[in-house]
Amino acid sequence: MSVKDNLNMIHEQIKSHVNLNEGHTVPNVIAVTKYVTIERAKEAYDAGIRHFGENRVEGFLQKKAALPDDVTMHFIGSLQSRKVKDVIDEIDYLHALDRISLAKEISKRATHTIKCFVQVNVSGEASKHGVAVDQLIPFIKELELYDHIEVVGLMTMAPFTEDEDELKSIFNQLKMKRDEVQALNLSYAPCSELSMGMSNDYTIAVEAGATFVRIGTRLVGKEE
Ligand SMILES: *Cc1c(COP(=O)(O)O)cnc(C)c1O
Image 1 (cartoon, protein in one colour):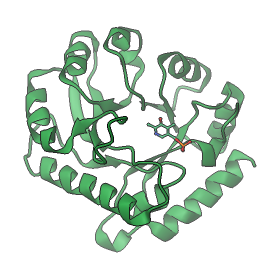
Image 2 (image 1 turned 45 degrees about the vertical axis):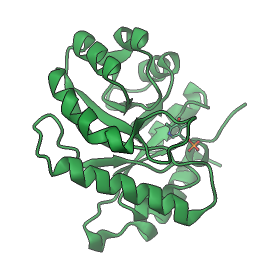
Image 3 (image 1 turned 60 degrees about the vertical axis):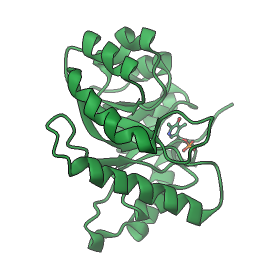
């Protein structure tokens, strides 16, 4: 399938699932290109996509260098502190701020403000990265100490399951937390965005109010 056809299908799905009457907006689609070649990423660009996501430093830098300048680059994976200096100034949005040591390294190395999503481990699975739900508010308050970080929103990865009620519950919890942080009115944490939804669960995330969906397999495919 061409990226264009996949994108049209995804836009149709988003349109039919977004709850505009609840004040939600149509989410941005981030093309996750970690499984595909530079050529396929360029095909996505030609199909009109301008948001790109990668989860490894090498792939991120390669794709950014190969794509035109008017793209917005999202680093969606867990970022090791020792690699921050190699990549931080190339990042527009970091989706996986999950520990104070990372915030500290960013504030030391970045020369511009990095738009960050705090990753939250809503499902509580041991295998998942992210701040525990009950630690989120203290974590965000502590971020005040670090420069160059703007908390634009919250991000989560849902478990790999077909259980729609479980997915709904996870995305709704993230939204409630987002509203709670937003209500704190912290200058460094406007926290208006929700990064949630991947190939298998994005329609449910959109219903719950996602503002960014991160789609790889369904949009650009997955090469072995
Ligand atoms: C790989 C990845 C995605 C995209 O996954 P698909 O299931 O291929 O859509 C989204 N978010 C993160 C954090 C990822 O690592």
